[in-house]
Length: 114
Image 1 (cartoon, rainbow, N blue to C red):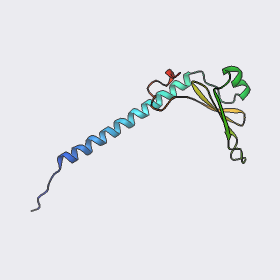
Image 2: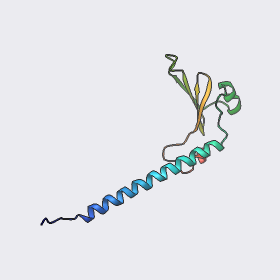
Image 3: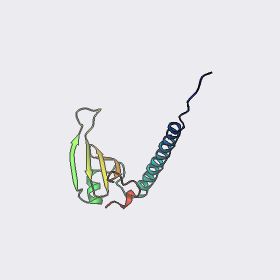
């Protein structure tokens, strides 16, 4: 007969570790879902607005970052403007996306960011 050694502490650590990973993943998914819902309820620049319309409605951005892309038809020019609460992405001169400007780690209440 073979003698089997059981290593219960190691097995317990693996089971607990797997449970923590699942819990963290579920929390991250819930946080992301909340953030997307909050962005939808905020007054962010809408897709299709021109740069002039965004400036007129929201004022001057804090930063206008240098354009990226534009080297071919498959890589249109992308501009990014940073405001205190959000970032606006433009393809050529039209809004393609607006997102909350939240510092890393503040995913609990992103709307509370200055």
